[in-house]
Length: 247
Image 1 (cartoon, one colour):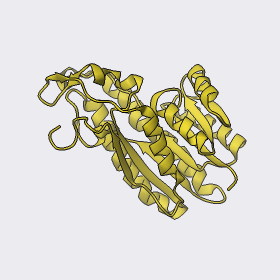
Image 2 (tube, one colour):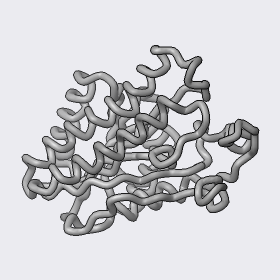
Image 3 (cartoon, helix red, strand yellow):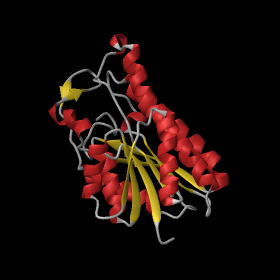
C-alpha cells in the first residue's frame, strides 16, 4: 500500500516518542495519542512526516472511542497499534502499598492496553484489506520483578497473557500481535536507574541504560514485517543490566 497508518499511545515522551519518530522515518503516517496535547504536539514537531495529534486518556473508554472515530475518519484504516502508554508508582514494599496505588497502575497498564487493543482489533477486523499488527509494550518486569514493584510487575505479566490470547484470536482476521519487552531505556521514567535502584537483596546499585532511540528502531523493525510473519516477543535491553543469570 502507498500509505501505512499507525497509532502510538503514550506518544508524548520516552519510548512512545522514539517509536513515533522511527515509524515516521520509515514512511508511516502516525497518530499520536496521549493525555497532554502540548507533549504530543512537541513530538509531532520532531517528526519529519505526517502525524495526527489525538489527546486522550487511555483509561477512559469514551475518550478512546472518540479518538478511534477521529482516526478512522482521518486515516480510513489502521495498520499498526503500538500499545505503549504505561504508568508506575514509586517502589513500595508490598505491605505498604495502598489500594489507590494498585488501581492507578492497573488502570493504565492493563485496562488502558485492553481498551486501545480492543478498539484497534475491531477496526482491523472490519477494514479492507483486512488485518493489521498490534505491538504491546511489556517490560523486563513481564519476566522478573524488582523489589517493591507488585502493581507494575503484575500488570506486565498480565500484558503477556493478553498478547498471547489476542494473538490467537487475531489469526482469523490477519491481525498479528506481538510484544516488546524493554530493559533500562534512558527515558524520564527510568532516570532513577542510573542513580541507583533496589536489587533483589534490597541493596542499592546503579544500572546501565541504553539509548531510547534503539527501542524506537526495534519497534519499527517489528512493524516492518509482512502480516504472514510475526515477532511474538522481542527483548531489547541494556547489555549489562541485571537480568540474565544472576545479574
